[in-house]
Length: 232
Image (cartoon, rainbow, N blue to C red; front, top):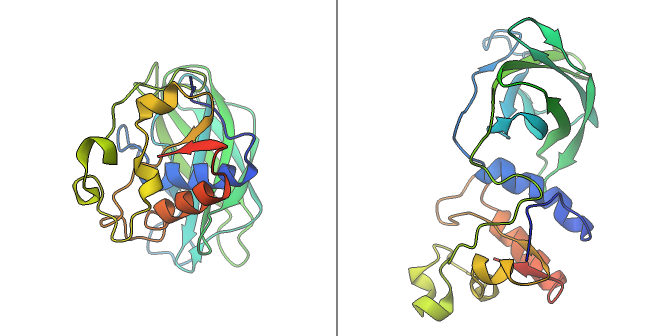
């Protein structure tokens, strides 16, 4: 039986986990992104929230910071959650930069405690030589979301496999598919004692640098950790 959990045991999976969330994250409850400087300012920082569904309690918060020159890759950024209905500031947290498996991009992540539902703002400060060093993101924190929480049992989904559909073309848009990724259903993985890595992607349609390489990255990890984890 597998549970939704933070990356552990397989260090190489930790960076990939964040990349998958950013590339294939939920579109529900997408907050307004409000940089502190105007978009016409070439030195402005534009924040991009990766974890778009947040609920009351401790939550992993991930975001990218971009300027007209590209993605900011400073080792860390400082984040202060502020509850907007009363301007109550929370603890200032350090968000570490996590490079993605391919290219030069990456995202910042930290764990923040939201003690109530409602409108929050993330005040972000980062080292950005020659440009602005602060920006903000407004988010809506839900009382409870439909996303499975860390520690909960993963849903026993009967996903498509080669055994049930026969032809790889019926279940994958990948031009060069790794057949090993289409052997198990998520239901099979839930019943399996090993850790599981599941990527939700459509390779033929995920062509951006943030989305496109993820199936290839999972395939490489499957070759490296064959027999030590389930890969779907």
